[in-house]
Image (cartoon, rainbow, N blue to C red; front, side, top):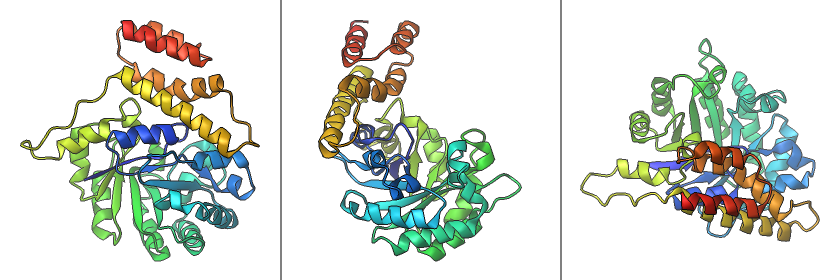
Length: 325
């Protein structure tokens, strides 16, 4: 079984992708890239597509609803296609700022439009084209099979299905029975997605016959989760998975990658505004520090301190204090 890191806005930048690949992920994705922003020359959007030395297979995910924007963005990404193994269309994000422009999960309501967007992508790149979507807008409209037909007609190379309805957002039951039927009907590899957080939930999803399992929120506090899940699929007699690094070592390595990534951006985009070391480190590490240290002794006091972090020195001070507890 292959395990894949989901594209997560605000999380799956190059440093975190690298952490997850070291933790066993077989494939990762960029954060969602706006086709409109890329088509209209918004330079900071290019930062989302930067990769670091040592990254393994990376897919680029875009979102949008305008065919011309999708075409231009696809051609732009093709110029740096050597970084990516595939180009993925997001037709599943339920966040209002995405759906209000007709993109993301709003596309689930119109399978034919999904097919047209995928066809435009296919016509403008040699990269394999894939789709990430949901099983339907709501329980009264399970139209994933119409989406599947339109996507396969457009020539996709793979499909990722978040086995929930748009109306469920990220909560409620995962409809594995529908996912299993998608796998049965599909002529392309299917990746399953939705609340896989441990060996039990991974094994349940694997029963649907998917070729890969995508992990999203479940790995945010533990980028080593991929290796742990892989170990659960091996016979008991095989070598067990290595122990997960502790939170302090994870944080220290993640911080090193964040600082290296900031230098990479400053070098590649000398005309763009790249935040100061303090600003970049505090913003990029803030969301991760909360998760890495969740459940540790003195977590309440630590959370209060994390809320006020503004500099690299303060981050290092927090790590040093945590090491003493």
